[in-house]
Amino acid sequence: MNGAESLVRTLVAGGVDVCFTNPGTSEMHFVAALDKVPGMRCVLGLFEGVVTGAADGYFRMKGTPASTLLHLGPGLANGLANLHNAKKAHSGIVNIVGQHATYHIGYNAPLTSDIEGLARPMSSWVRTSPDAKSVAADGAAAIAAAKSAPPQIATLILPADTAWNEADGIAEAPVDTQRPSYSPQAVDTAARILHGDAAHTLLLVTGSALTEHGLALAERIAGKTGCTVMGQTYHPRMARGRGRFSVNRIPYVIEQALPILKNFRHIVLVEANDPVAFFAYPNKPSMLKAEGCEVHRMTAWGENSVAALEALANALHATAQDVKPQQHPELVKPTGALNHSTIAQAIACAIPDNAIMVDESVTTGRGFFPPTAGAAPHDWLQNMGGSIGFSTPVATGAAVACPDRKVICLVGDGSAMYTIQSLWTQAREGLNVVTIVFANRIYQILRGEFDGVGAGEPGKRAQDMLKIDRPTLDFVALAKGMGVPAVAVTSADEFNKALANAVAEPGPRLIEVQM
Image (cartoon, rainbow, N blue to C red; front, side, top):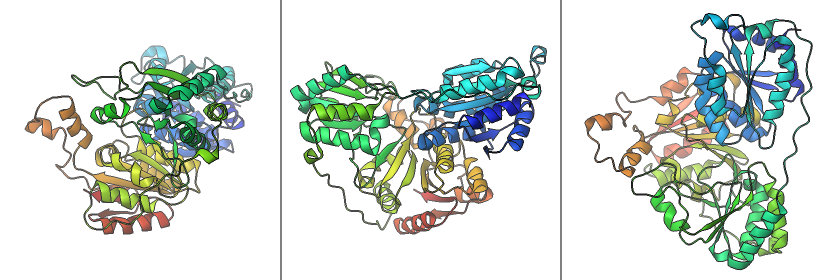
């Protein structure tokens, strides 16, 4: 077999059986191997940002890495924004990036570039295979890196001649890395703090602590001690809905976050980071915690936070009997005009059991959490890296990972245009994704940021750089042009009906919410 086939067979044997692809000339032998080797599902994306974002969404829901196939340096560069988001979310991905044949690189052909240099900022593991006989072993090492604890983005660069020359065979990927446990000393410190000053202690959680089991343990600890449990502003995945402990997030807006955090004397981090502002603003703090507040790390990312929380609950003698029942607003379908409140209510009522919510609604969605806390049980995925164009690819990958679950993607119109090609892939693959586009006709988040940084009152040219209303985007036409049935709504009643229809039907659907 050639190097390309040895790599594909190694990937499949190592449990990497999905490849999100956008190939070019240098990858044709790898494409041929994908065609020849059984066991690998190939999903085509029409833009590399769709490919890399889909791999992120796949990992978040499946817990195992997918592979991507990208064309040389420019192809990788097109996918870097969503690799940035994936890295911040600690998603495991195996990127296969084509390269010119080793003997051709020195001629500086038009597509020649420093692929390793492009890959390193968004990858924790980077390697270029030197010859065909090394490809399988390099692929096995990439799988091991992607599956490590914490998971990593691994980028394997495959020169064309290493793909077409003769190889030795497949390589066995190392046994999956066991998730590190946790520090008993860190748990003892957290228990001591909660025994002494729980009323002024914040348990700040993310990662595996936001699984249903992790949240249940945090709920017991809060009920027993009276401490506060909150999440970061954004999370890779959070279990939510009826029967699950609902935690508030630190607000994005500094003026809202500071009063919430001002009285805490201790913050115990469970995989989370120190609470910092998303951006720097004149005369506003970067750190959101109060001066003098002590921060204690109980678990780092990749450690076993559920086991640590269980140990903490045992140390505090916190049991299910200590849980204080939460009250959620009654779910009532709204009527009348569309606004942030009625949109949130309609979505909360429409979420089906076991749904996957992918959230890039930015300004429109900041009020979605309170009403959806009482919705049907679901998972909520957010953008950890802040690079927009995140949600529609991640929804695509999540739907590939979980074909039996309905995926609902919430996205603003500006963000949707970055990776709108996701709709084509959803239609081609028949994926169960409902995309809800909030047609603000403006980069609403940027209008708020303009004020937040104290840039003054925007003039005509500044406003033109923030508005996207000339011409007006027609998402119904865009969706239908890519094979996705779509409808526009202008009232809460129309939105309720459109949501019910979209959730009930298989395959992709789009709803344009005209604000």
